[in-house]
Length: 471
Image 1: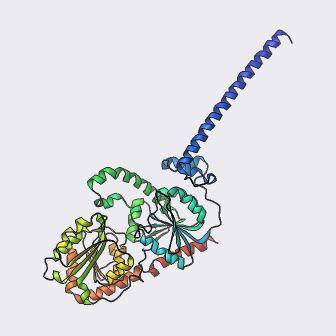
Image 2: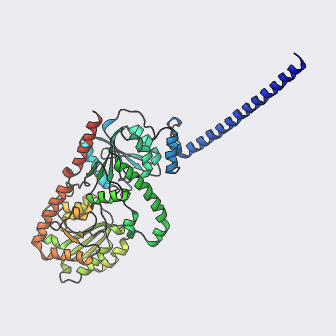
Image 3: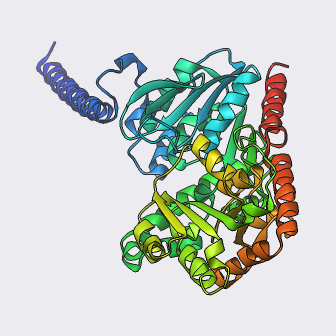
């Protein structure tokens, strides 16, 4: 090999060496970046997993749960999977997962009672039921009336779904934070959503519930939440794979206006009234002089500030002392709304909530239900009183006219304490009409909101979905 060839060979070797060095450098750089990605992935995972969950159950949707919703959707799309992938199982269509943001417990026995009332009927018709309640901390499980109740953070819903393996999902008050976990079950098992109220209306519709300071401090956050809720509902409403159950026609109208779309596969099924507990016993003419009010004092939509004005108007009548009043309830407005009433010897004020059996006993001892309101999507207390034979004196607002007419009760105009007082006066002055209205009220409530008209229809819907999913 001559000198020229040697020089060429050495030049070629140097060139190869530089190329090899560059490749090695790129590989080392890539390895470094991969280590950074692995570290970031571990950090993201550790931020969302609980200490008692096995690493092999960790999925990417747990790592991104805290990210903005638009970024979550982008990550899922980049991964080539529009939704999270559910675990593989052979679903039993008679196995239900019932999801609700509030549910009775030993600490909060009155939370979510309308939802819980359904469970007994579902179980009686052969369904297995597990209840999931999203809460900030994992507080474990308990048993209530034949159903297991799991209380855990939203990020644990995947484990709940995988462990229970439901054949149908019953979702009450649908909220956006749970949708990433449930969307993947669309088309795989039946999903039913119940629209009750707050999840499907603008906060401005009940702006009288908030002080000026509360609105100034929270309106931006409420607006942002509203955008997410509207997006979820619009997606659910147009999807024919999802059954939508509204507790009243009024609530359907409100929800569709909020979502800005019509709801497909929609049903109007009222919340059930326990007509066995709130049983009807005929009222006598003397019961028209016994007025009771059972109300939450937590928010202005319940109209508890109208109680004092109504009783004050009646105090000007000659027969005021012939009428007794019992006021039951609790909440942040209780003291302010009842302070005026303590001066009347014929008014009894009791600050506490009662369980259904106590309420039924109190209803049995009275004849008139004074129940003012500014907004109700159905009015459970109203229906329970009517089922017991009480004649309601209430306001012609929101969903109330769907459940009370002039034959079954007295409907005053909005915020009209004089009109409410006039209703009680009319009943006092017309004992025979009171007795007839009591019979009509009980009949209407029991036919309209008793089990045969409510949960029996829900059971048929669930059974039809079960049959369809096995064919």
